Image 1 (cartoon, rainbow, N blue to C red):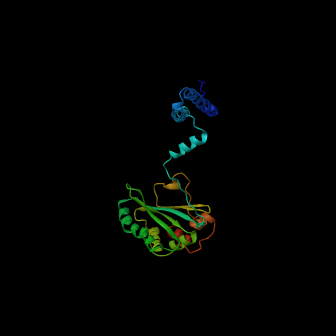
Image 2: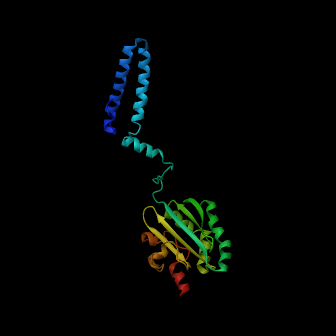
Image 3: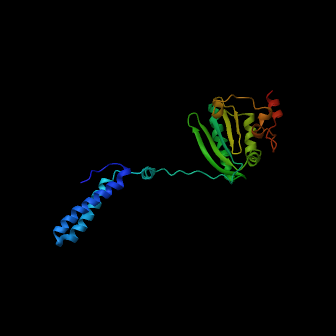
Length: 241
């Protein structure tokens, strides 16, 4: 019997040598007993296949190993095609209670504002309610808008315009914030009466929202608002000062 060498590189040689040896042995036995010639030929062939397959079961080529490893993956991974949304805007917003009085404001005004998406304003693609925390109560939303123009028009119209004007006069024991992320580039953030830093404000320096920094369009693009703001910068700061 020939010696069997292990390894993928000698697999074909070993397989051939083994099968040849078996058939030679059987051929000798068949010559001695012609009556069993056909029987030995079939059984020898089966035995050769069985033993050679067992001998080479351990040989796994790299391609086969990669296929087996991939077959173990159970997570279906997908991504999104945003070609139809070149000016997409994703905005996070929240209202957090600062004082006991703020709970009344949150329960009274917050739901009305957050339910305004049910009217399906032009440009709003998706609205999702978010609970940022239970203690203190901190509710909000995540929204996807077609572009900044549609988002800006909505914030300047009722009911948002009315709520925003009232909030800027008196936050009612709450704090409000938003952060917006633009597919074309740029990030916007504003925080009103947020005594505890949230989001970007937790690590980036806070600066006054004045001049170019007063409006979202100014902060992101350096341009004046396309739609007049609810309260102008001069009216806002003159009333406070």
